[in-house]
Image (cartoon, rainbow, N blue to C red; front, side, top):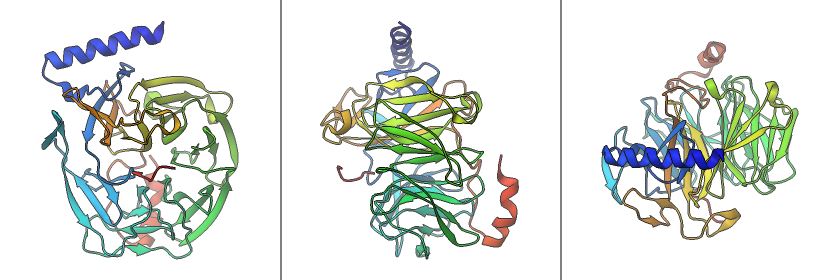
Length: 358
């Protein structure tokens, strides 16, 4: 009954927005969206993989091999009747063509996973070559996330089931956890908890920054892209799922026990892949056509504002309607690269794909 009422409210909101000429704020990628949230087709058709990061001015970045796409801060182009953010291309010398995941380091660099290990590049100097980080481990190049203390948690190993913690200050790399099967995206909260998407087993696992097991539970929708809640969404975890839904899991303190489950978005039918929270506190989720894998619908990528549904990929921006920060991000502004020593001293003060078918 509750879902039926909320669907009617969401449909009414969408109709009103069209009448007022503001349909881009209520794009219909998700036919049902909890009325506490808004959705916008941020960009598309998406080129390259689902990993995301941001410049220090707040511009979204995505990656396609050694090319980095920087998206306009404003809607400056139109596709399928939809106002979207266009992009410019930066080619990074020496950046591996493998891997998908990216994250903003608190030292100002952008870190990315590859099949030979971590690499990083400087978004304030596109001409500077990428740096390979000695001692790190390669994998399929999916989950990677910056911790509140500036360390980089990432997934690697032959089975993409190992979680490593890279310390940019000490230049050390430590295996902290090994899962039973492939891990896709990962995310962290301000206290150092890490959530892992067991994309093959359709489960979610929470560990500490030291790799101590906290909790694990089965999920109904094959979770992929992840985020921790913030503000009024404290003690929540959000998952962008493979079957075109977004699920909210609510816990008590410490992410213990059995969570309450609420699907806040349903019906996109597209393949939900990696996701990230931007410095604007919004949840950016990727949508792809993946041939019916894990419950998505073959041939469905994006439902454009002109009523066309096709297999083109896109990024959807989900945010709280009241303007509050509902999703946790480790940076209010993206820092510029500086010396590792200075960053190490200052971190304590900072705590406040398209992949091939599997």
